[in-house]
Image 1 (cartoon, rainbow, N blue to C red):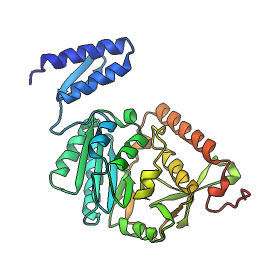
Image 2: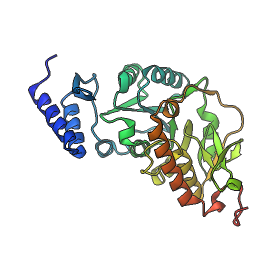
Image 3: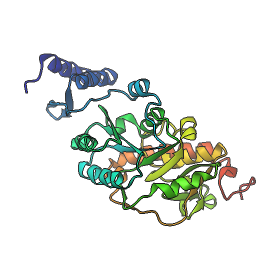
Image 4: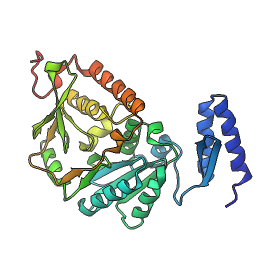
Length: 314
């Protein structure tokens, strides 16, 4: 298909903006190109333009929230963030859709249609009415993990809000045992894997936790009471997922809520965690450290929020 002249003009203007280091304008122009139905990618030679896939693209998270605020109902909503890896996307979502209880909404945020992963999401959505898809022009690194999660929370009105990593594969129905933990009204967060702060190491380490009260739940699969998620979200400064799940967990504990892991093994397994192993190392390590440093600054002086520490920090 011939590229429209106005799209080429936008691409050329974007190139000039990048040369002038006007990245705000560059991003605006990329969004305009996306709205026109095209995708621009930077190349060593300049740029390439390809026709957009057969689904709508939302330019900004704010625009999504403005349009769909608390519009997605359901007792439970499970958010899956897609940032590439189309085959893993297909495997993880098919397993989830096969085993998730009837009536649970699977909310998929596709960030940038990286390597065609968004097309996979769209194909699956055609045959699964409980899969709700949204596609964004920006990648996850550009949007930020916490901002994506907070936007997803903002468009739901569910009793429970779950976040699941693509590396998590369902081999059976894993949600009900977690939801059972919320029969205790003090419980605000539960999930698959928990960790505890090692206070003997001055909070520099977290150790794996057994069932029961824990300090934090990891983001492989975590479920938050909806009312709490809408009140206490992950810190918007968290661009990368790593340590952001623990920071969020501790914020929930600091507000006086319980965080628990259910008894027994859940029918889940983990495949390759691309979010960690295949992220650009310097970006991953820099953003992870920023979040952990912020976590320490917020909570290390308040050891009483931990489930096994008394008011004296013992």
